[in-house]
Image 1 (cartoon, rainbow, N blue to C red):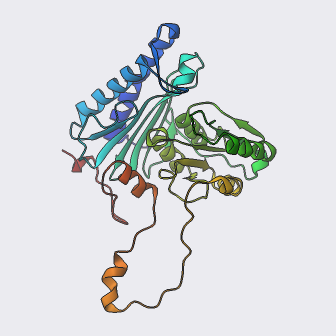
Image 2: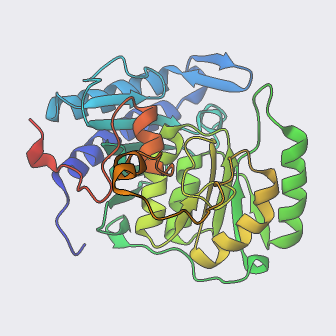
Length: 323
């Protein structure tokens, strides 16, 4: 690897590997794992809880003033007022895990004032470690990765997730699948969104789309994709995939073609049309400067975490700014 790891990324890797050890031990006798159901087709196991606890203990031991947003415990632990928030999915792909289907992972991201700065996605069954730091590229097992170079959707392998909750738009998804099956080389549903995004970053697949995802499903994987040269947004192609809970990722050429297919199925509000405005008078400057800014992943994530998004162009604090 051509650069030294950021200290916070190092801690995230340590936490992910600790969780991976718990998951791998449990996978040796998956029939003995206690399983409960949060809602229809949405499972949680004792392994999810043990993995999450190991991650949080590792992170807060190193950074006790940081905040936590975890899938199972929410924001119960950590400092809710912190600008630094760890976003954790301790076992993405729980349904796969309890069936012994080896496609699942640990996902850990660090958000600083709403912008994801560090990301780790760890696949314990293959010992594959995906990681990224903002502005420093994405890596798989210490090897730099890039999104695929394919330019035609018809040549592409695209991953997705199926709806499984009560109230999900099953008919709409079937229509999308019919479109994608006709327009791509193949459609896959591995069952772990964070790993799906990591695979887009590594060029193993060319695109990914899914609805109904939470921040812990996408935060780490999205940084991997962008640091690998790809694009992430919602089905209209706009940057905010947090608010409408629909995520689309791909290499830049394929991303645009996927948007053309998915835009009619988007729940995202289209951006307001731009209009020419008369030149503002001096007394209007204050009101003009207070106009509502466009929603970005940073502002959407910051609001979801209960924090303040970074000012435009503002640099996020580094580890040296944190107690």
